[in-house]
Image 1 (cartoon, chains in turn yellow, brown):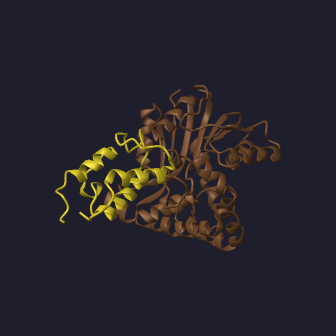
Image 2: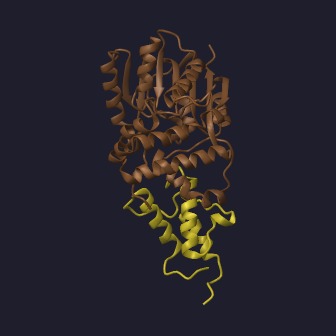
Image 3: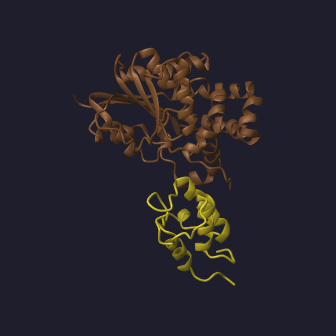
Length: 84
Length: 278
């Protein structure tokens, strides 16, 4: 995993705020999809690319489909610490 | 990432005027039966296929869902002696359509209201025909669209729908790799979501309708992109004045992208019609 000063939850929140033009806090437990934040498949593809650029890998590209920001964060938290 | 608002109403408000120059008078795809006909002839041919599928009869009450600038609704009212209610989520569309009907002297038979096709608020069983021409791809909740179409149909009434369709699943890795192409399409054509023709058929059947027309018009609509590019060349200055250089570039790129998606079997064009049991 690439070293980064940001955590995944912050990266996703920034992505959502910019995409959806939101100024309020984004609930990390809200659904990413139609009943919550409202991402569609193309938005998810873009998010996947953003996460991959930032952290070197992303859950969507390895076949996972996290439903919330918290689940995305968990994907990275579950990984061993990055090589120092 | 661009800051442009892709909500359907804002999108239509921004580009309605320019689209008329780019897409032709009828503002939709064409069916090229000979291959070398003009865009106007081909768009008229698509409309005629919808008319055949809808089986319009004089005196009927028609709901035009996603009526755009009202061109279709006014044509139906003027040429087929029906009364039409056009609905759209764009106030600019309502204003343009209402003006068009007044100028044509048919405002008593073609009216327009600001309503959402997926929650139209109209009474049950209040229309003989529902007409959905190239608007469904902008409505994310396709289930609700079809449910609403079925709900407002009288027994024996018909719905006719045509639109861009998705002809295969797009794997996530491919979507990610080609996301710039799809972002370009979104910038030019709005927040579109294409669905398979089979899905429309399933939804209509599930809503209690009997599907009796399904047509894959993908090959016959392919020359549309060539004609759109010609219009872009012909009306370049006017379109740039309305959309800007970036908008014009996005449109030209979109023509190329859509053409390639048609040719590789990803997207295409379909027409479907169904009847509510009498």
